[in-house]
Image (cartoon, rainbow, N blue to C red; front, side, top):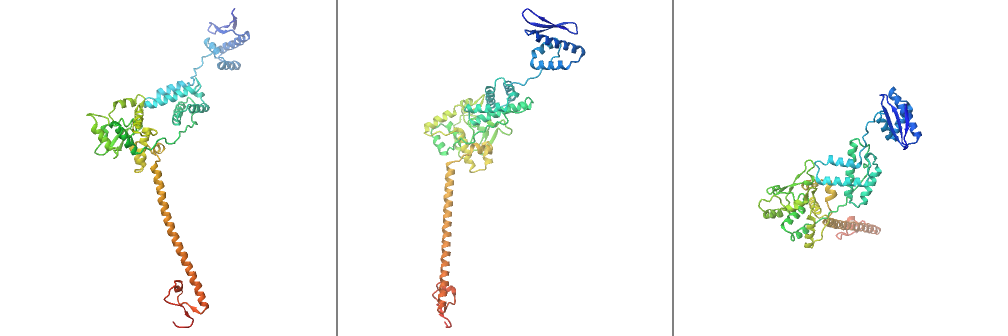
Length: 450
């Protein structure tokens, strides 16, 4: 049997003697007497079940109810041995905790720039999703709302697309581990604009700029515009040992894609436009120079712990353009590389040019190949020539038609003349002579000799 004890301060307790003979106490706190009496009844039923090993249906339903709705009371019953402790249920991790664990697991061996990009996407997820939300609580609605908040932040479409991809990647990882049943970001489409923002930079523009820069910058500009190298990563990484003067080729390091299988170095011709600048740089290079662009300060600033970046090169190039009186173009270094690829594409197959410059045909079409003023001029000139040929052909055709019409008229006149002569007793021995207006023979009267 169990009993209820009420203290002076209003708190209530239930005391009972367990089957091992020890007195146990359940501290209920301040509750109405009716509540204490209902718990006392259940305690007695649990005592009986502990002896018989069988729990009646009503008690089972009540235990299930407090397990879900009153875990504190269940804990007190477990503490006095009336209920077996539940197996600990592993809760689904929060978005914040899972992002931290994911980045810790997956960033080993990744490039610093990739780690930075993933970290930015992770911070956005923590900021824009509800605080404390668990992975299995994130819905497709949350994912769409996250997308809208990124757009509202004014980020570039390409940046938004990459961060949505990282978010989808994180939740896909949780799906692989059976932590969630579906990926809420699977249907979120973040399309980037395919409009090329590069500009075609004419060779004459670079040649004009060369007159206003020092030999180091002449080499940088030549490698970018005439060699098609990525700047700064490839321009500042290429060494003199990579230059094969005899075969007129160079082995270009590819820091940007070196983590891809089969990538890291590509072979590229030393183009005719580039060679004079490389030869000049070689002549001016100090004894024992390792890099083609002998500027350690540039390399140290551009190749930081977060990967390659433009450092101060863009600012310096803008100053040099102003000094030369040349208007700057969009995406200063990328446009130089795109201009070179566009030029080479006119002379060589696309797959060959892509192998030389280290990209794919798809990337080249989307981001590099440009329509130039020269393309438009050639198209216009081609149309003019076609029109001239068409006009000439048309004139000849008209002349033939006029000649044919004239012949038809002459034939009709000859026929009419023959009919008229026939009325007056004349006939022609050769109708063709009449149609040809021949004067060697004349019509004779019928029945007479010529």
